[in-house]
Image (cartoon, rainbow, N blue to C red; front, side):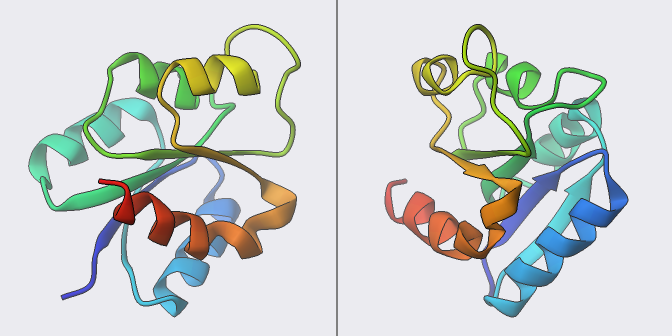
Length: 120
């Protein structure tokens, strides 16, 4: 049975791209378009092994998700990370983000997911 990855992104195009990359790597993907739906899915689907979440979304994105301290490793992706404050690389590390990936480097995502699962 393939490991289940939760992808959280408000962009349908980005969700489809990430899903294609992860399915091609052998994972099962479930999607949420906001943090509230992601939290519902995490409650319903305890088999979710890793969360891949967009940093910037209307409902707070990865920052809001990390504030709830999910049990699963969280990989944060973004087109740009702020230099300071919530969402910065330092803030994300301090708040237990497993890894950050630029959306321009999504080819690294399946390896990041594999590494996150091995750290569980």
